[in-house]
Length: 141
Image (tube, rainbow, N blue to C red; front, side, top):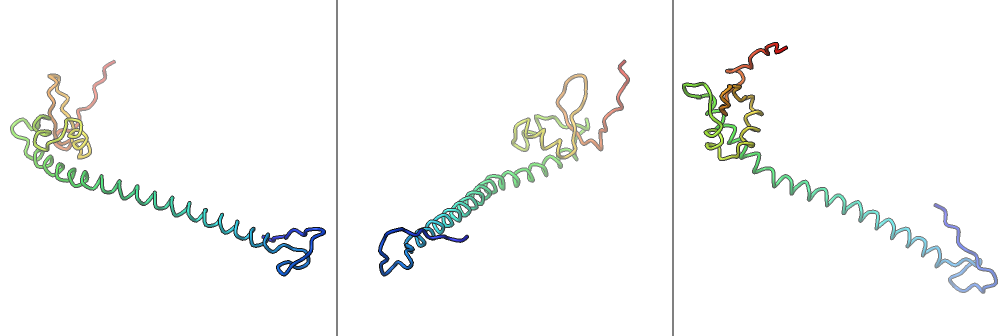
């Protein structure tokens, strides 16, 4: 960027002026550019600090949930591997053992490749898909 100083007409040059050029204007323009640069750097640093702090806060909040989910999955795996005489486990038993809500337990079970029984009596029982594959669809037309 080329700075063109202003030449003042009909003014007497002094010790800081040469050829009727005010060097204070040059210094002022450089100062304004450095202020803008410092402001821009401040914006970049502030944005980076905000992103880092948000990521760290999210990590702190989710690390406990991930560890808790791993323990719950291990319990659910043990329960579904030993289903008892019926071959199924009730949702009340599953959610009660892991200490989670029905929705949370269902989320974990679906992630683990388990499914709910399609019994017409409406019982809320679950088992492994590998042990209880879905029946073939019947033509209902």
